[in-house]
Image 1 (cartoon, rainbow, N blue to C red):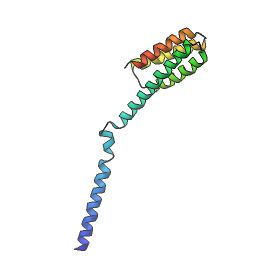
Image 2: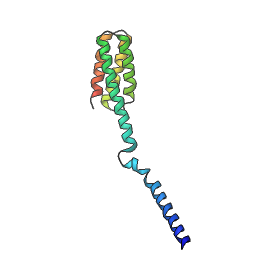
Image 3: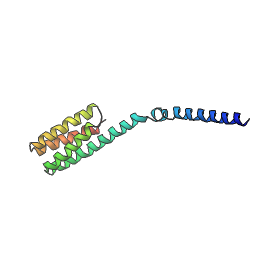
Image 4: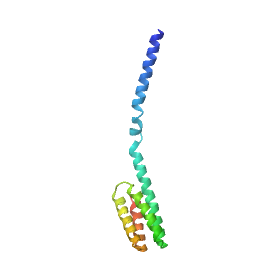
Length: 125
């Protein structure tokens, strides 16, 4: 009787482990969004950071600090490029590129206007 009980316990334990190993990896994928949710959260964080940096670029441009405007606009561009796809993100990227181009040419007022438009586009969903 003891041998039969031990064999039964081992079989039940093996079935439990097999069932747990099969079901647990599927839970994050199907349970609450899984990997796609993490990607969307990351893209949203990059978009928010791009908005913040574009607004900082506008502030620097209003003060006439072209160097700081360029630095923050380039950082905003890096984040915007990682913010996923969409018409508003694409328009924001275009505006940031224009801001950088005009900033390098020394046109602080035009660069500021482009950075402001970039922040506006990136803020829209």
